[in-house]
Amino acid sequence: MRHRFRAALAALGLAGLLVGCVGPETRGVDDESTAFRVAAYNVSLYADVADGVRHRLAGGANDEARKVAAVIQRQRPDLLLLNEFDFDAEGALADVFQREYLEVGQFGEAAIRYPYRYFAPVNTGEPSGMDLNGDGRIGGPGRLHGEDAFGYGLHPGQYGMLVLSRFPIDLEDVRTFQTLPWSTLPNARRPKNPATGRWWYDDAVWPKLRLSSKSHWDVPVRTPAGVVHFLVSHPTPPVFDGPEDRNGARNADELALWRHYIDNRDAGWLCDDQGRCGGLAGGARFVIAGDLNNDPADGDGHHEAIVELLEHPRVLRHAFPRSEGAVASARERGGVNLQHRGNPAQDTGEFGPRTGNLHLDYVLPSVGFRIVDSGVFWPLAGQPGADWVDASDHRMVWMDLTLPERHAAENPERGR
Image 1 (tube, rainbow, N blue to C red):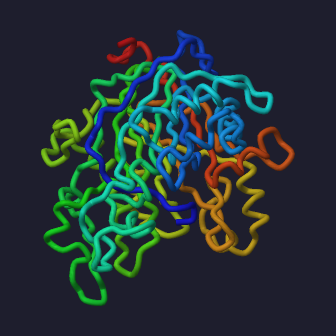
Image 2 (image 1 turned 45 degrees about the vertical axis):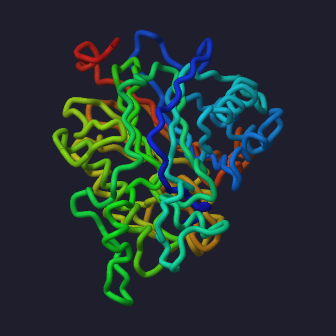
């Protein structure tokens, strides 16, 4: 949309890797507290060729990665999702980023270590073997390959995801929905070609098309507040299509998947890559996080899709995180942002003179949490970190969560 091409494609649901490092040195809280900080950050660490980012970062001197690491070191989240972090099966890029950037102090910040991490294949760049862009051909060089992949990407794994955690991850209970067919979603928004009145994806293609443009993951993490299901994704941007609105429809339905997941424990159609069916248990605590590519009021897309997720009965009603830097940026942009209806303080990125700033990145806790503090890391000019934010067109969104006092002693999953 406004921020580079996203990805979407499929790969067989390879298990993510859990890697241990020594000595968590994160911001953290007292061991007796239930409080923890969770964040989402689209870091734009992708390349147009496989393994390109790792080569770019080798040696620890890449300025973009140093700035990204500095933001993480300053904010020190305990649980963090990175979007647009290229996937490789061995985790070589994650190793380099952790060892040469996070574990080295950047621009005066203290080094940080994450004992646990999770990553897995995504759909971006994965050849579908089908003509998805309607040009009469299957695949081809460059963009033609990406447009016929399960999710847009120039190579498998482009625009991947990485979860970093201070707390243990229950790896055996992780669920991924990379290969879930779009057609299985109840009331799926199957795109139609308005010029012909026919389905954009015909009956041979539609049942094989995957819903998630990257993947949807349920990553259970054993936090001080008990087991928290970290529900992470990166829906396709609702642009780069035509009047058939195939990307807009897909974005809306990728958001709808989370609503179904937290709504219906017994959904027989909702089967993960591991063969387990059904949604999330009714009493489970969760945090939905990611670059969801949908602003509640401005920009492209079906705004009702994000609003329905925000207003879901299991999602905690709260004031959105905000920043002074976003307000200053909108003021500088003038024209385009003056036409926006949303509160500019809640924007999470800037996407050029035509689109302006938008609210696309989210941390959405479930009912049962209490929000202690929150924000978007977007400092004003001259404030610490203001010269780091240009490493990505997105800003980190963070939230400090705890259990209400009456629940802290009653949490059945605490200490597991």
